[in-house]
Length: 230
Image (cartoon, helix red, strand yellow):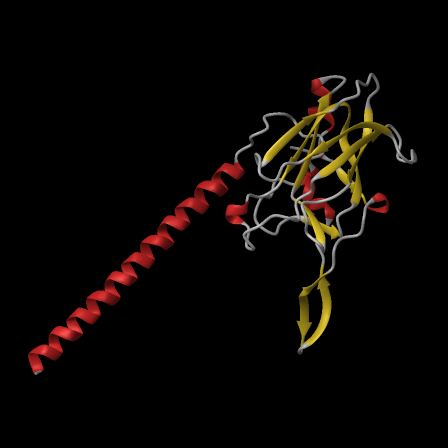
């Protein structure tokens, strides 16, 4: 009887050890996959200057920007009393951060923002970015923008600006999607308006991870002379 008990315990331990080793292997493989995805996100896939980059001097015109989504489930508490509601600034779309949740959310499926570019340029293209489903905490990305329009202007007081096209961000496509602007311009512009018309089905909010603006400078050296980059 004692021998049988020892054998049963030994078999039980083997099963647990096997299950634990399988779990550890799956965790390791998942970790490798996430690291590869994040490494890919860290690479600059676009290979074009971004004149909507905050560190280069670009900024959000808050008075012309839709208010951020107020996430009630992300409150700050003091002595069990809710004090502040967590709100993401729209300026995150001007920075190269691609981690899940590090985006600008606004309520519903329609919203807009005006960006003061780092330099005056003739806009040629824009790039929209979003995370893939693989690393989304919810396993889906229906909050990604779908149809959006781009306008440009020389001065901030121009209400609408010059229409440069309407585009579709395909959430099943590449993470980085660049769109060539449709109307040819001869004037140099300082402001770009991004107008999101709808998303991929999320009922509460739309999330933008990064928005880039590409184009031609008067003189390439001008960017480096006037940019705050040391």
